[in-house]
Image 1 (cartoon, helix red, strand yellow):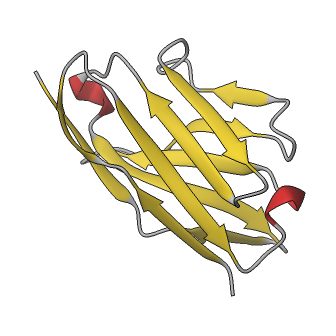
Image 2 (image 1 turned 90 degrees about the vertical axis):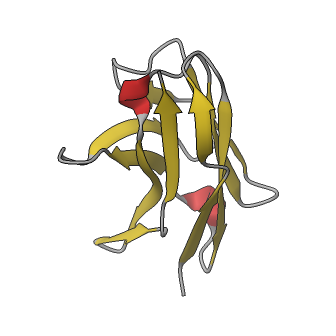
Length: 116
């Protein structure tokens, strides 16, 4: 079965960096685009960044452009999100996601907290 496991979250001061990882299993990783989402307290879920199957194409929310970088390693079935110049408004639970066979699959999420 599809499994997505996020890691790398934590507490960081504003201006700092974190690197999130998503380990995937149960499907042919290189066949699917992957996405990072986040949900902040009291807010709707937000698409943060997405990446095509080969990694050639990426898309970012305006709020993170120039600060976050999404990447994937198809040989290792992993996806990452390098987050630099973090802001308090980046505080959220971050999730990796795939859309496969008309179904959304989610990991358990990893908490990112940015203090001012």
